[in-house]
Image 1 (cartoon, rainbow, N blue to C red):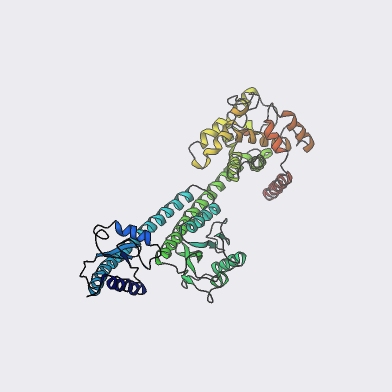
Image 2: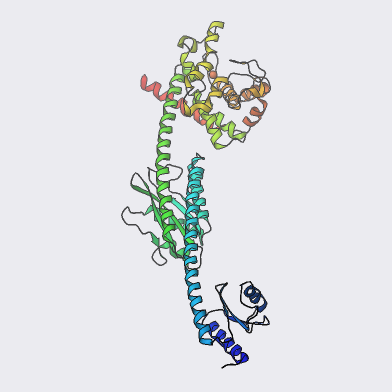
Length: 481
Ligand SMILES: [Fe+2]
């Protein structure tokens, strides 16, 4: 029979053996001390929270396992070491099974959470993309969102040089994040996109076998972007940020979905761009036909559109808004279609009645274009381009800022072009005189701020356009003769 001291020494030894085997185990002695434990007080305090351990008994045996208290065995005076070990090992096995199950549940919850975040990020990407009309901005947004959602150092999209691809994206690479030897990597991605073969596709690029992976010294995932079942570009993500750099299957699936989404998005964008180009071509043809009714106004709408757009940019408007001003300038006189040719082309002075007919054209134009979605931003410019800052214009006699900015800009471009062109009743005025007249009208007929912006516009392209139009008209005239 072992004495209490011998039994204590044996249990201290047993704990050491268990610790050697990877199980954190310390005996808690009756006085609360724990031989061998680094933070005895902390473990003992924990042990005391378990009923029936350290109260009136000689020894208690504590085996914390994976930061949890796994076993706490009460030692009766006759307990043997073998008995203690059996009990502890059974308890430890049970605890291990619980821990395994817990880790399984934790892994599952983590994966569920990750899936939720990835799906949410994909929807957020779709929403963001839908909110911007600029294809370059949209692709950058997609890359930024993927890079935020997945643990990759960089994400890139590249498009090949293909007529199917919208011009803004053709033969371009967009890389978001930080890649080693970034410029070389971008060039390699662009080359890879250019050399794409429909049926030869490697999903995981490996250093030594792929230039992109070799340059970045890491694996990269590569997905094709298709338009009408034809590969037009690729999506690549590389330099995964984690201990082993291994790319998981859910990450690949996520990138697959994004590449497919970019393809669909591109198809829509290309169709929209095609339809828009067709609509703009039709508009240009209609306005040119109206201008051509009077040989003296030929090309007027195109020149007004150009100048109005340049003034808008000089005023600090965005590219998108300046384009809207350009379209409005292009269609500003569409209502002249309703003015009889005998009035429109009259060489002499107009009667009051005839001028009354001319003055109807802004409202006629507004009526014609109302309801066309593409032109809804142009309507203000069409209806009000003959208003004056001092309120003496038509059709509504609006004053100052009550006149839409687009209309104030078109008003100036229209006046400038009218004075700069030959008319049936007078020849074109010299540039100096036109500019002096514009300056004189600032604050009465014209908006002073628009006049100030106009002074910054380089008129060389306007003059070139005028020359081109005159040459084309000359060729047509010669052909007709
Ligand atoms: Fe007009």
